[in-house]
Image (cartoon, rainbow, N blue to C red; front, side):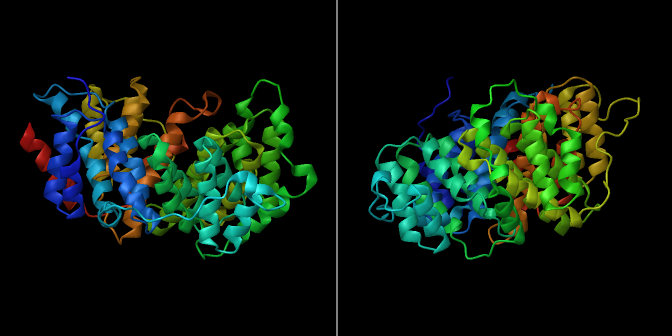
Length: 489
């Protein structure tokens, strides 16, 4: 039976708006099972009304990664048990339902029509600012002028500008914006993920409505932002020359020496390391990928059980992941100073880390692999260890799995599944961070350039496991989802 893209999700939306957990679980399982709707499509259909519902960015960030984690879970191999294929078909309900109930109050506000009105757009050609639309948007953000920010962004939409142009404008406006946690940039990326799943089009106004107040947060920038700005504004640090570079990329210039340099000296030295890596042949994407390995080392440097430390370092990882995503979305030089801001953020965060708490590539014993030889059994063992908070056991299972030559995408899916077992409850900000942080580490792990990979066992794998394992939260909702899946088998 072919997968349906345009399914009727009215019953699901009704259950979500009523905060009906059992109904939400039931309708999600029906869409995944009998109707075979791709998980990302379901997430998108819920995410757009959630964006119209406005509010804090953490909840929609959970939903923005739920579809991605659900798709990774589809790569998990089936076991020999009866109905194993149906179980795999239904398993993505775990991250999806967590995301749906996290945004339930937003969907309740944003579903009814008509939607809130956005201000009259200003076409880019009509913007009266010496630095054009970008300068005008930066001025609007600095003045906390929500109406003007929305008018400028709606001008791009109204004139038919490709959505990549809109994202470039947003990223460029935030190149030196870094309040504690770096949320403005990470929220732009979260919102763009929802729109990616929804195929943009006429959903762009919902994105603009949702993201602009989150960019205008009155939280002050940390000193990181000013240090990065001061470095970037020196003529010798301009990165425009990258636009015309014709040499073959050498991403190994963003390897271990670069990553150590980011954390070893002061902010100026960290930014110098970025410039040297770029001059050495690395692309902006490669430099950002190397930064994520350095961010993972910060996560892994936290003492076992240090929840607050993991959350602090996890925020840095979310920011460097957002920077890497931005470099994938656009090759416009206007956004490349984000690399300096990320370097400064990493450097500032190093003071809170300690020597590595866990060996990321430690030797595994030569005895029988944990969970047996079957990949499905090995991954179930991994999931169990993560849910139990046994980081060492989970890493042992992960390494065994990779040593057997099994695909990393399924490994990321199982780590994401285990993270989705932590209930993402509205109002519990720390719980709302777990799935996005794990998804960021897992995505960076899967997308590392070959020159930066170390046999599949690197700091990002350890960070993903640690964040999923040690950031504990209740799992009552997850238990109900699993019981409902079992009842359908």
